[in-house]
Length: 285
Ligand code: ADP
Image 1 (cartoon, rainbow, N blue to C red):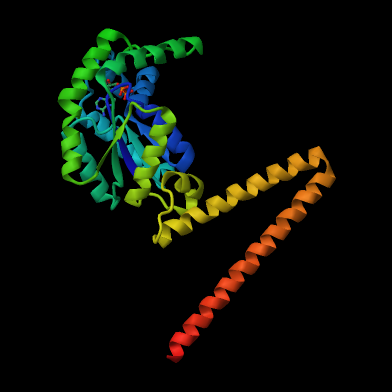
Image 2 (cartoon, helix red, strand yellow):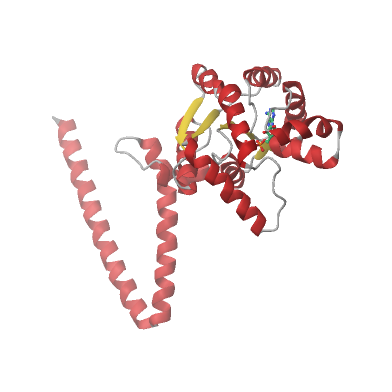
């Protein structure tokens, strides 16, 4: 699976990217992270990018395209990736299209996280405070002044990508103002709907995200193992509870259940037989 996360600074791209990495086992390719590493290592790219990043501007397209092109070649990116912070300009998007085409790779989706601008500053402030609390180094560009500049860059240079990808029928917009969990679930639902992920392999969440509808055999089948797994887990829990309460109670419960189950089965069997009879009769007629 190959996806792009699009959204202004503070929209939650990094947070969601990490969750997607855990869930689908693909890598997160964050140009911001890569550039920060280059700056820290003092590489030629880092030296070029340092001032630009600190002021909230955008690093030249050829630099980031070069970084991404190399990174996509790495073995860990073979099974898929999430692009976070790239592309950020239309020329970058065009370069990415070209790059993927050359490698015969397909882009599955572009997920836009839409947020109210008024929430962004406080989100970044919270992130800074949390990083300080954890004793982590705070980003030089996470100040109100630079954030304003980053937002302006986003609006003028990155926002046109929304149109770019919507024209190519790749764009899915998600409300980034929901809770982290809700956003993750919405992304998952989108990926399922787009066919970017297999319902089977993520049955549990798939069942939650897209409840089975009548008549849709595929969806129902996808939801089934999840339900069974849930039921199984529940009965284990129940059994443990009962075992703690007392073996007698557990036995009583178990036998009651068996009786109920048997009754259900008989009813079902009866119904099936009746149905068969009707069909036979009709066939005769
Ligand atoms: P944000 O949280 O603002 O999205 P990132 O960590 O993605 O920040 O990026 C930090 C900075 O790195 C950007 O403000 C920009 O200077 C530079 N940068 C990251 N990705 C790109 C890119 N694709 N093109 C140009 N500059 C980039």
